Structure formats: C-alpha cells, structure tokens
Length: 287
Image 1 (cartoon, rainbow, N blue to C red):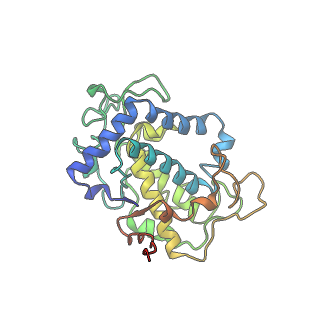
Image 2: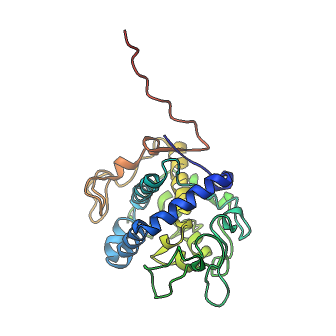
C-alpha cells in the first residue's frame, strides 16, 4: 500500500528518488502529457472545466483520480516513489525546505520569474517548458510576490474542515459548503490562494509545469480525507438528477469508467503518514 508522506519528513534519498522520477517522466514525454491534459481541460473547453474538474462538486474526486494516474506513472519509473504532500499551513515561507536547491528549487528572479536553482531550473537542460501560456521555455515562480501575500493558516483550514455539508446548489463557484471553500472561490480562499502565492506557471492553467502542483494537490486531497473522517454522515453531493453537474454516480471526463463514487475512499489506493496503515489482507492457512 502506498503511503503519502509530508515532504518535510522526506529523507535526502527519498527526495532524490522523487525528483529523479519526475525528470525521467519529463525526459520520456510522459510528464508533458499530464501538463497538456490539465491545460487543455481548462483552456480548451471552459464549460467542461467549470462543470467537472474546477468550480464544481467533482473538483476533489477529479483531482484525486488525476493524481492517482500520475503517481502510477511515477511508480513505473521507481516503484518506491509516492506523491509527497506539502502542508502549506506549516511550511509557509519561501525559506521552507521544499524550496531548497536539493529539492524543488526556489523562487524566480525578479525580472522574468525564471527559477535558477534546483533540478528543475532551465539551465540544467532537463526541464524545458513546452506547454504554457507563452513561448518562454523556463519554469517560473514568484513566491509570495503577487496578490496573495500569505499562505492559508491552520485556523482558516480548520474553519473549512468544520463545515458540515460537502456542497450546495448552484454547484459552482458561488456555492457554499466545504468543497467550494476549500477550492477557494469564496471564504478563506484556500486552494486557489496557494496557486497565486506561488505564481509563475502555478497561476496558469498549465500549473502542472511546476512539480509543486502535485504536492499542493496531494495536500488538498488529504484535507478532503480529513473532512470525510470528521463528517462520516455527510455524503458527496449532488447525489443524482442534477443538470450539468457530475452527480455521485456520473462518469467524469476524460475517463470513461470513473465516477465520484469510485474516488470516495482514498484508503483503497493509499494512506497518509498521519493515519493508521491499512491492514494486509488475511489469507487462509493451508489445511
């Protein structure tokens, strides 16, 4: 069973294994297929994006499946690798360990946002940007320099986790409820604010160009799991019969065999390092 760990607790060997797997996916072309899928999903059909993966109830199950697919690609390179999560309520400055040169590298230079250190700097020759909003080939960041000066706090997260209802009509960016407050279109602005705080590519539809995308969404996914544990009687909503929204048993595009119901129990696929491990299946003893 895969265990997703806090990036701050990774050993130097685990950091190297993760970054090496990312670099190999970039080298063999797999990585950019995920960037392109996310970018095309948002930019190519905004109505589709609004109703399925963003600004909609299926934001959380859609990204859970997206991360699962990507994690499986990483594990084809190295079976020991899993997606780490970044707890931005704790590691909340540009000096945090994930931005060190031995991991993701730091912020971009002032004049153009180009990341100059770490394994994903353009100068290394291993991380050229081919999917994006312009022709610049280098990864860009501007940590804390934009309109989001601070990352969300634990108190803000706790307030959202306390919300008892998953989502409400009209099931979009104006909805109240846990999903939309976590996504960030109202209230404390959690998920969206982190994208803006990082800036550069993370502030665009081509946000997976920055490897921190996966660690950010792994933490958003963890927060969903924590909300489910706090509110076990609160289901995914809407349940059925809702026009132009992915109901509990509706198929999520672009997959043809995945519904939100399939994604509700993360422990079928992985656990987090803060929860008990899933027991191994019991096998009958030979008689």
